[in-house]
Length: 109
Image (cartoon, rainbow, N blue to C red):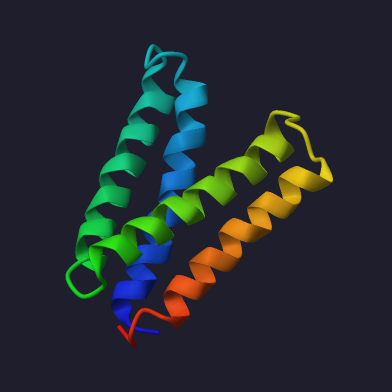
């Protein structure tokens, strides 16, 4: 796995952090959660931009959003008691399989 893919995975994880963090900012009215959320946003976008130096933009963006979508959905289930029904889990597995497929078929980048 190249450094670009590592940057992309970390960027996707940070996307989860800032997306969940927005919930805790209460409209960016709470200073500490707002600062941490903004820092995660900046770091996520920065690492995404570094990954895009060698990974095609379509692949990088799809993987970044896929990691974020699955991660935030899982955090929503764990932290905010969002639904955990089978259909929802199967849809998340489809996203994960798409992300894996993009990695496999990205032309060795």
